[in-house]
Image 1 (cartoon, rainbow over the protein chains, first blue to last red):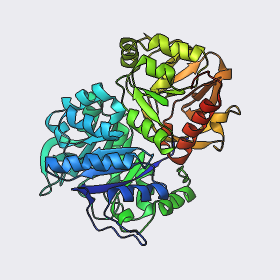
Image 2 (image 1 turned 120 degrees about the vertical axis):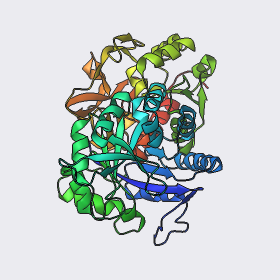
Image 3 (image 1 turned 180 degrees about the horizontal axis):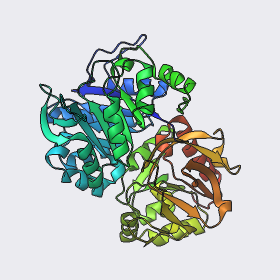
Length: 260
Length: 208
């Protein structure tokens, strides 16, 4: 049986992990390569690096980080943040990334998804989507936001479910659904949003935004019908290890991969 | 030297990384002479089968790969590198492949998420050196939308369930191929490479 994937996400700026990271007995908690190795040891099923650097110098540093990680950690690695062209994608894949996550650039130019998928295969192209509930909508609707790196972003006017369907037609092989409302709250994922998208598309859906405890991940997989869960804060602060989360899920009859 | 065939498909670097990590010397190359003289050959690959076949043809590697496998030189196909060994594929309409293993490559059944992406178990159907130190039903990382169906079921070394049971490992003499990505499957994935290389270096293939 295909297991559910648990994916820690690291925000990287100028080659360093941002957000406070607290691990005991850890020499350099800010080094993404070392953290990647640490999460790999804990049983992470994949890793995501999200580059929040704005400058081109920063992207060069990011490629070095990806290269060093891929030389040491032998699990899938997705890189996202600021990828605008097929050449940007090519460079990240050449450095050792297995997938790239594209977001704003895909919203502005949906054919960018197709160009990436035709060149590198659908399995390489992950659509990252930032969605927010439309206040007072009934039935509930969500809108896709872009440029979420700064000032909370701006609405694209696109409906999240419709955008997901279109992106898959364009060639996306996976969708990471990030709820802007839930992100950072640790109050749980937006299950309704997840379920709406997961039921609408044929590709795997990854839940993002809002995890505070193992039960939230369980709900995303069961009620939200997600194929994988991405989380940052609960792992970075050491509140729960990946193994803690997997133990919890295993007890609740969710198939997850054992370490090793 | 272990040749990693470069035919414009992605994923080469991570295959080479895995081989280096084990202390062997990988060489990413599309040069027929280098490929032929290697102690072992790895054919990796992601992307579309038809593109892969046309690139292999352009680089004059089609007959060479057939010859390497005919002579039972150690050969490892990974993911698309497994699929192109077959007679043909349904991917993007019917396309002929290398025809080394009789059988066809078909789309995974509808109803489940496609691609089949993530860690799934490999049920070992035979005792084979490629599985040395690898527990039965161990998890490996898969990413694919098509699966291979060999006519000769005795070649199926490993099987995985996704809607249907499908062939996830093929073995015939010194030819081994996996549908999953051992270079992305953690320690047990590296073990698969290590087993293959040990098998290759132990094989009397008549080369350096």
